[in-house]
Length: 350
Image (cartoon, rainbow, N blue to C red; front, side, top):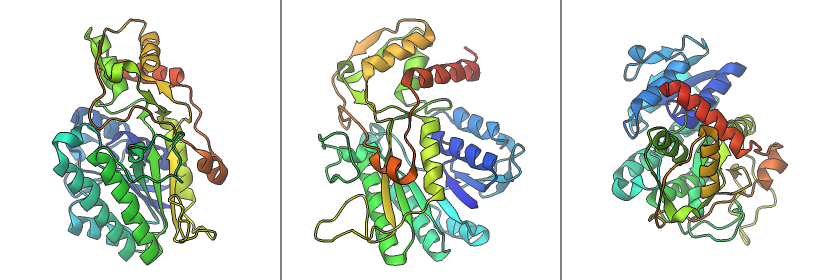
């Protein structure tokens, strides 16, 4: 297939582009390489995939030196004319949108960034898919859409109308926008609710990266909700396997869907939402203990109350993923953390 993957300088997008290129798909990667976090990590990911930093030019397709079937373009999803031109020229079979303004806490101070990237950028993609007859659109949603829901494990069949951050609201908006285009124009769309993704090449603003960096520099870490937070930490390889299965299996309509008793996770349109999580919540203090074990040192902790926008617990019900795509994430947290720490030490030479 010819597949557009947006966000390929980002954590999940980088790994997905690698996986698709390795299996022989024709991949076009797209990213605006913004400065939300250390751009050296973003350029490092691209360089690992054979996209040389010096070859990158705004709006120009660059061919990977590692994978001849992988090309990259620096482009912003908000640039509607450029996105339309790219779709018209390339005629993609499938699109996986992983580009977004990420982060819950950042959305409290920079709300405009989320509207521009996550809403305006997404509508530009939907329109491009519509006018170029793209056969499958998958996109990153988030476990944060569950918001004030306390019923666990979180199921895609639960109502999610009570977000507690603008980031979460923007991801829920993506699901609603996608459903509209599935209903009106028959575009198969699948939303992927990721649960706390971690692993090598991870984001510098995420807990594992922050904690590892602080520990190796001999600094204390901030531990919110006094360490009693629970997260369904999901290893990057498990996430990628789930995404690839969705790319290979476009959403279908649910013949049993009823407007009298509407199921939020499916539709009479070719629309689907899946959780991709480890299905095994881990207490934050236990996660930190696993990092200490991987590093061979104790980390000093500043115990703090929960932050605005955070939810105390996440726990994914992955029944639909297992039953419909035959896949269940399964990497143990200690194993995943060990791999991250090994990568971190090598990348930063520490």
